[in-house]
Image (cartoon, rainbow, N blue to C red):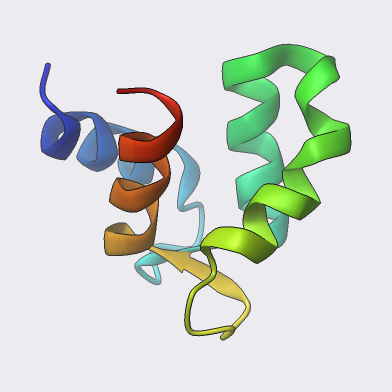
Length: 72
């Protein structure tokens, strides 16, 4: 699975309201899923770093950047 497919799958699962962005709460759920409870403490810091336009949501492109930096 490449990055684009992974991001699409994550958005399908965690963008609960279907607005095309992950809210802080949706992002916390994603981090909990990926890292378990240990990741929750760092999720706010990661969210703030990758919410590049500071609109309070992680867009698809911002999630691609996050995955490229932390996963690949």
